[in-house]
Amino acid sequence: MTNKSATCVALVLAAVGDAGPEIVASRSLFAGYDGPGPLIYLGVAVVVAAVRWRFAPLLAVAMSALFLAGGFASAEFAGRLTGPPSVGFLAGWLQVLGFAAAILFGTAAVVRRNA
Image 1 (tube, rainbow, N blue to C red):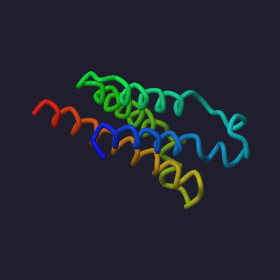
Image 2 (cartoon, rainbow, N blue to C red):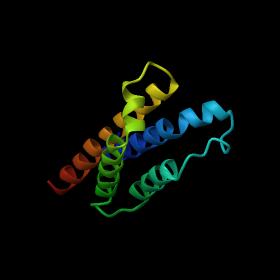
Image 3 (tube, rainbow, N blue to C red):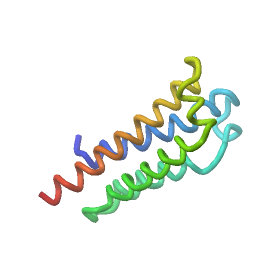
Image 4 (cartoon, rainbow, N blue to C red):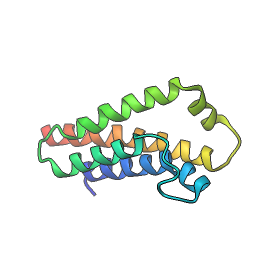
C-alpha cells in the first residue's frame, strides 16, 4: 500500500470514528447526522486519491491538523477521549488515530515523491 492510499484509508477511519457513535445510537445512517465533518473527510480522501498532483496529500495533512486542533479545543471531544470506555470513547480514539495517521502518511507521500 502506498503512502497516498494509506492517507485515504486513515481519513475513512476518521470519518467512521466521527460518525460512528451517532449512527449506532440512532440505528440509522441518516438520522445520526451531527455535522459535515465525516463528509469533508471522505471528500478530501476522494480528492487525494483522484488528483495526480504531487502535493495533493498535503490537503489531507492540513485538514487533519485543523480538525485535530479543533477537536482538542472542544471540551466535549476531550471528554470523550478521557471518559469511560464506551462507543464514544473508542470512536474518539479512532478519529484521533485516523487523523494522526493521515498526517504522517500524507507527509511521507509528499516527501517520498519529491525525494
